[in-house]
Length: 368
Image (tube, rainbow, N blue to C red):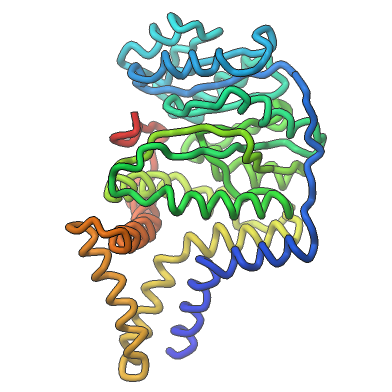
């Protein structure tokens, strides 16, 4: 029981803070592995998968057409995944080069359909509610001047900070970790707001397995680098409440666990040593945190007379998270965010094991 207690606490500390310190130390000792970025202007296809996005799709197309890129070298494709509103008509009116009116099959299959007909040597992807800065595409595509780069993701910032959600705080730390990973080897995850892939490196994955988690490690196994380009910036509306963020992450992890457990993420074959360490630390161990917390709490309760302070700290975290549902003090909100988003990892696994995961998706409430 003592080994369980100390082991679970040590792993939690490493997953949440120690991993970042290790990356910083490795970067200092080993130095960064630079990307040979350079100004290039290949044909680019920008794909926006959309389902019932009539409130934002015209603005998204306008944003895409306003990017600093030669118009004759930019193809804007909206792939409508069974939209029942005016998404298709509004995308056409806004000037998209191609609008695919597809039957409902899920975001991944909509993206696959768009890529099959894409003319670009580089295919970029974005969410319908994400707005790119004018130079974002140029910054992102410059990474593909390096022949080793097969995937690149940019930096997304969340813009509606008025609610209770603390995702912005977490996301800034996540972006820092991503920068360290990219400098040392390759990123272990991306984001749906702003990313791109070399056309020849694109792979079609299971429709319930999103690109954000499945693309980086799969491309690394195929010999490519997956890099982070922080200068390529986009903004996206954040779910306003912590409870809404719990629901969003729960849905995301119902798509993520299939990638972890049967999609090849945990299979180390094809990983360079540094990258294998990153996958184990940033993905496998991070997703195990709810179970490590339960193990630590159980072991502490079994030995509570010897570990009263540790028990008080764990119960205090839960009490602060509960109080954060009524009070808007920042420390209480951070505690609530941490507890609920950690719980969402386990909830997503339970959802997938109980009834599987559908390929279709709906935008989280408050993000449009």
